[in-house]
Image (cartoon, rainbow, N blue to C red; front, side, top):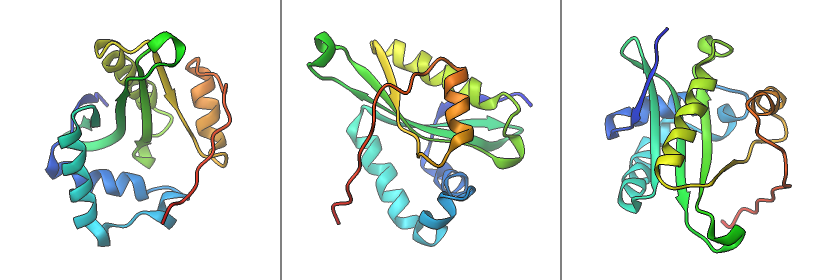
Length: 150
């Protein structure tokens, strides 16, 4: 299957939510029953300017997605970085090379935005994802922490 990547539009939100829900972890924390909150979040992302939702389209359907945020900061001699989040490929298409294309697209967009570093976090339970990122040359260089604020 040929997949092309583009910036998401509001009409893509339900398909992206379906991708986010379509795995063991996502099934417990996502839900199409709250689509209005996802639409509000998409609108906020659009307004931010440096926060992008990208979709992969194959055979006329959204089959992959990721979020890419550009961060300007002072560390590492003021290196601009790209943060990749919520990487998803439709379950029937996993292990077909689409994930590698998706990450190549993210890296190209990051370079185009002047980033010198691309980073991501992945849940400790996602061992298949860890092997995938290792194969692509990503290094598990940091230990991440999260704290719910609500």
